Length: 500
Image (cartoon, rainbow, N blue to C red; front, side, top):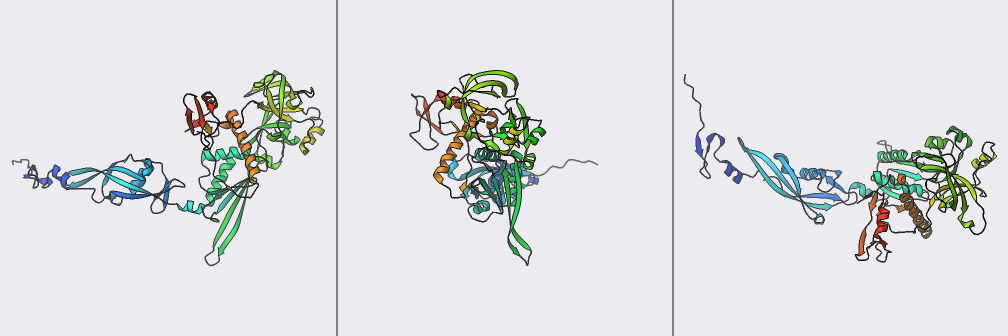
């Protein structure tokens, strides 16, 4: 039997007359591309909704997503906004550059579809998205009173805000405040308001992971429907920070000091983290007091940084070992206010042997002749083990008296948007807040360990005169601001990690 291969009949394209395989249809490939539009059901214009308060985009019906410009998340939102796009196969999509302030987003989309048997058609087209602004439900609640479901009251019973300033930078660095409806500044701390209880619990967990706090929880019944058994309850979390701050003079209970490796009870607090970190300047012995241990036997600070006294180093000699950034030394110091009046000097053991030289200035606490009115200090004085060894002076840090106050910096720190929750004397509060913030900025410059937990940003600057080689900072909008040289700016930026 003779079996011969069968061939399809060749026909002419009814549009252009080109010979084609008759089994594939009556149109050639070129005519198919010219006569068919696979993107006909896809609109060329669409709209996007953007919330300017929280920088989120609306994905219908009620989902708000965070997406940066020209990101994969934003491209996914754009493709989901086109209704007829599901009927074809999308093989490529990308953004076309547009002016950022035009409120227009252009996207080039490439689709593919089978128009007839064995013929795949691929087309590219452009879609224009018009961006409109609208507040999301969470931002609407932030501008409406009494809409919060949970609040976190952070308090610290101290007379300065150094701990809150560092805690604010930690919150900003990790974005822990993004879910808040409002933040109010109160007398002894801050109030954070949340729309959901789980977001408040998440914020409380963050506080316990970065600071020694004690958490208390309460709830209040707002309304109740007896027919449906539904209730409206508001939750409140009270987070109390330990009243000990960095560089405070601390007198430990004798029993607690013995439990911490028999450390000398009168110590310095050199750092506040998840615990209270203490150091004995006379022996370089360190100890840490956790939040649970502190609240079982609480103690207060003898003095804070507002009571620091300036001393002049007359003589210093390194006598002991080096431990980390500290070096044990013996020094003879005199109070700066007594120079020229009397010749009273004090012998002190200090941990600043690697920093101080004869003639330098240092800040410390004057213990002798000062009435602290502290029960723990009285117990140390009456104790036979410590009564005769209480130091006269305890140095804290090196002092730079010639440093210019309120100098211009080429870096800055971000601040949270807070509302005033109580009516207080504004002028006194503002003056004291500015002084505390300036001191905090100096601490950031001097302490590498403190600076490592913060995000520094470049301040806005402009060149005033190229010939004068000086730069003036214009962040506050002051055209008459004092100028500083380029060398001073480079000196400020030394060893500082600054973000744009």
